[in-house]
Structures are given as structure tokens and as C-alpha cells.
Length: 364
Length: 126
Image: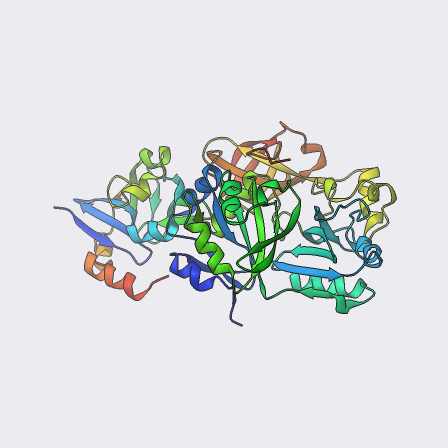
């Protein structure tokens, strides 16, 4: 089966992108600028990411859909304000994470952004629990781009007036070239910025207009990965999967406060046990000495005993050394704990550290 | 002038007497992208042609560097360990990886000259 193309495929190629298969799509891994330059561009100025491969799912309905959604996504829709977004999970019976996602309350229902690799199975799961599956749609005609970086606000404000007033994890409808588009102030880079949902017909025009401004460039999946790793953010299928609970992943904030009291959601009994009785393993950041890089699959040791495994790791250009996320036995998970990472048969000293590796403040 | 030969795995070897200087080609660095880590072999290590000799890592991935000829390592290039971006900047010069005392000079005949390597790259784009 050949890979799918987003509406920006030809545009990426014309911009000098190197295209690679990713989650069933042909996506740009980098442009001629190179991964480190692209990474630095987002930290210093601004960058545009095509994330149209992700699933844009909407459920139209009144409050009656809320209880169905809350059964499988442990958020509290009663406190979610209009146009407010929350990070959460699609839970399974085993207390594991079937996907991590962003839910936004909109005027006629709920929008959910799903990971590309999971979106079709997620849609099936979500439609199953809805009283009326016909009110749920996966929008293939919509493109999605992220505009990220310290200059994202001023650049986008010039093109779409009003976006500067959005608060972090809030969205709204805006007008662009005669079309109503939806923009949220959010991202996956550790920088301020936006995610813009717009029709496949208008996306190229918007990208061209953004690129006509100074200090903004197209950014590929390579830099997206190094940026999110520095920001300590999880990549589903690597740092999270069907067997990791939100507690093991140290993502308690993805479960709404009052849902942590009742645990009345799919897999809630397992999550409850993890909160009350403790966990055996935990997701941590790991800092290596020197230039050595530990990547996904590298084993973690403490005094010759295997105590964990790396789930993501790469060079972090803004940090100047490797940025590594992994899971370790709970008794090794405290900040500052000395461990060793095995790379090509040799063990290298490392320390458990706090996430993120790189921090900037968001507009609150 | 020393003779430079190329392997299908995108290493070059510059031969001077019985010592070969080995690095990766410009084409290889372009495929790898920004190099952020390099590991060189220990002096005295004996290797056979095609064997893993060194490591080079880009932001995204780690790759092995193979030796195109058999022999004993006489020197590694500490400059690329200190500044891995040197491999991008000058792959077929100051960005060399190691020197090897060649034990089977006849292996050189199986390697490509510059023109043949360029043709090989053109015919095998990755």
C-alpha cells in the first residue's frame, strides 16, 4: 500500500524537503536547511510544521455526549470552558493509554486531535461509545499546521488579526481568505505558538503568506522530534503505549482533578491502584555525561542490574548534549539517581533528571 | 600524490605507502545530515575489510563506519570527537576518522576510483 500525501506534499518537495514514510504518510523529515538549523530557527524565530497527518475529529452534540466521552477520556467537560483545550488520553480497560490527545470544547460540540498512527482505531473506539455515531467525523478535508517559536505570535497576528489575544491552550474561530478557520494556542516544541486547522484548498496559500514574512521557515519531523524531546513531551508509540498508565508516564495532569477522586473511567481501577498503592516503573528524563547519545531501546542499569529502558533519545541542539526519556524501576526514579546507559555494548554514566530539558514560558 | 579509493558503503581511503587514511564521503555526510557524535577506533585494534570501525551519529540516528581495507589501527582523529561537525565541513579532508596499517594491499583493487564512485552514487541514490 502506498503512503498517503497531505495537501502540502508538492509544496514540501518544492521547498527542498526530504520526504520519508511516517505513520502511513509521506512526510518531510527535513528541508535543505538541515535538522539543527531548523531546530534553532524554531527556538530563535519561528517555524511552520505540517501536521495534517494527525486526525482532526469532531463530535457534534449537546451535553449528552459529554458523559460518553468522559467514560473513556478522563477529563472533566463540566469545567472545560468554551474554546478551552485539555491534554488527556484515550484509555483502555487495562489502564493503559490507547492514544494521547487534545480535546477542545467548541460551540457545537467537541474537537479532538489524534495521533496519525492511531487515528483510525481511535475513531472506531470513540464511535462505539457515542449514543449517535453519525455525529462524529474525522475531517480528511482539513489540513493542520503548527506555527511555533518566539515570533509566531507577531507573524501570525499580521495575517490573522486577533490571534495574539488567545491564551495558552485556548482556541477560537478566525477568518482567513473568506474561510472560517480554527486556531488554538498550543504546540509540541516547548515554544509559544499556534495550531491552525484550515481547508486543504487554502493551506498552501496560508503557508506561502507565512513564509513571505521574515524569520520563519518550514520545519521537518526531525526537528519536531528534537524540539519535543527537549521540552520533555511524549511521543505516542515510543514513550507511551497501550501498556503504560498515565501514572507510570508521570502525566497525572492529563486526568482531571475530580476524576482522580472517582476513577470512574475505562481502566480507572488500574489507575486508582497505581495512585494509591504505587507504581513499579516511572517515566523519567536522563542526562548523560559528555557527547554520547542513547537512543530508543538502550538498556538502563544500576550496579549491573537492568533497571529500565530508553524510549526516546536524540541529540538536543539547544541543550548541547543528548536528551533522553525512558522508564526506570520506581526506586531508581528520583532526580539525581546515578544509572548507566548501555550504548553499543558499553555502559556510560548518567543521572535521572527533571523534565523538561529545555524550558521557556508560555503566554498565560 | 596519494591514491584515493572509495567503497560502496561510502567510505574513502587515501593510501600513502602502507598506511590508509579513512573517512566517509561527502555524499555520505549529505545523506546523514548534521553530525553530532563521532566515535573512533582504539589504536592497535585489528580489523578486516567491511568490519565495523567507527560510529557516526546525526540528530536522528547512529550509523556504523566500516573499514574498506583490513589492517591495524595506527591513529584515530580526536578532532572529530571534539567537534563532530568537522565531518560535515570537510569530510574528505580534516574530517577523517582513522589511519590503518594496510595488511592486504590487494583489497584496494576491489575499491572504486573517484569517477566510478561518482557513477555508483548517481546510479544508487538513496
